[in-house]
Length: 174
Image (cartoon, rainbow, N blue to C red; front, side, top):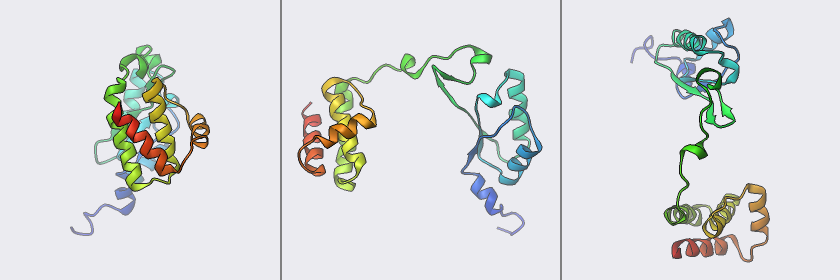
């Protein structure tokens, strides 16, 4: 590729980034960031959204600064985190949209994850935390937060490898 046609290293880096920014309209600072970096995309937060027309113009102005079509993201989780509430009304939360996964369907997946830990990283904190999370879910249908998992792990007899093996066996047995 001729040197003139090669993208700058900052542009190559930019193609793996999605950038957030302040403001509801194009500013000299945002223009400079987008034209210099050439990111793969932009992400909008509540601080960027006032209404439908304003948001459309902002995204159109952002797109005009880059050579490749932008991947456009919005920090939208539904429920309490709903950036479009002012524009479209409330969106449902993920819990309202997705049905819970049946324990019988999830057990083999959890066992697979723990088998990976058993092979690749048996002494990692994540291995034991995930073992605790999987066991509690399999037994009671509850996902524990990390502080509670740490307390659970501290009270378990045996080595990490033994805890993993017991947890995998229980999950596989159903």
